[in-house]
Image 1 (cartoon, rainbow, N blue to C red):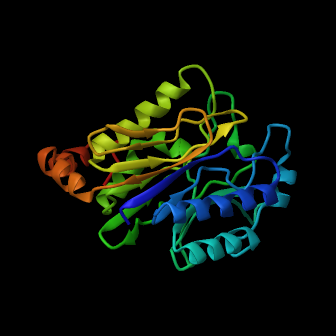
Image 2: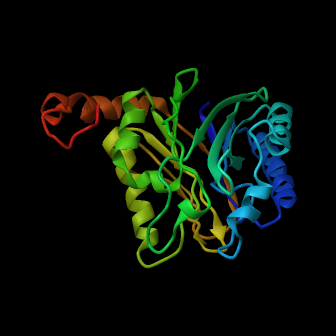
Length: 273
């Protein structure tokens, strides 16, 4: 799975419109030889501040609902694996999960991850609409490729990226809807490069643009070099990844091996494995 497509989109509030657009983008990725297409957070729909938790919960679906089922058909038809995101139904009234779903190239759901860190910061309060997940999903395995999945605000918590790397991830994928604001582009670019550098892996970060979001979808290599930055325009880029660079970087800069977990464990505040 060396050719990966990065999609930067502007989701509307219309779920059906976004679904049709996603199917079209999957077809484009397939024609360009991509083996994986990664979509941003909030692919299903943009949720404006004026939308109530009850209204959002009404458009949410189960993972086996029509939205993902339609994307499964597109994945199978085009022989492209898909990382999509949905508002997933929750048993908690007027709350939904912010969920990433991995579809393999045969149209099967291979993994789901519910965002664990909700964006209650900079004046936002995602917990008013979302329910947090309770687990980090193991990396998705495809041959030698192991994809660790995060979502947006998760990038600000280095523990999560490190845990995924320790579990074998050589590529991290972080779909996002990174909200505009003072220094927010700098924060985004810094977090992406830091997570890639400190774990010696690629980081793929498809982002929303337009509405209240910054765009700047990126792919960064294990040395922190930016391979793609889509700025603020909608677009689709296909990049070929080289796992030999991950191995080479981890040999020359063996951060995972040089960790002192024995020392960390003696700190009363250290919980990281």
